Length: 238
Image (tube, rainbow, N blue to C red; front, side, top):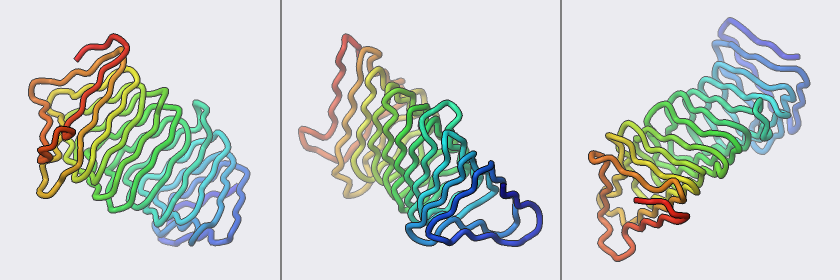
């Protein structure tokens, strides 16, 4: 088992392969560094950390990953697909790929890297995005909720997609595909109207339909016939 707490010291795992069997917890004042380029780190029964810098693949076996502040060079987080294989991150920046159960981003997702999430559970962002990179989410059996913010591009596939709270400003293309429903809640919306943005807005919904609050606008600078596309199937309404 590995436990680190207190003090301002730093801990680094820089070997090409690291394996820790028991649950690991790090609450240190310094830096926790996991990998330095293509390394493979397995924390079989999960890992909890105040903050971490990751450049490699971090794997648990049906166990949670919880990191309050994550900085990624190129990070791959894999936990499995059970109800206990959750990923909870506070703030996250850099190129990050997450594959696992439910994913919760409680802080701000930021930076130029792409955030890719493949999950069997719900994906929830608690704070507005602040990304120049792209957001790619595949949660085909779950719900994705995004409270607005800014992002380079968006491609979300889920059962249900909810845009909440505030507009989502996108500097590239936007694709929202909900096999059941897509909802733009009050105060939300999609804004692709930044200067020079020719990205399209594509929305598809299933039997649950597409709904848009009166104050949830959709804006674009693209003046082509394919600028905004809306498709509803399975008897849903719009």
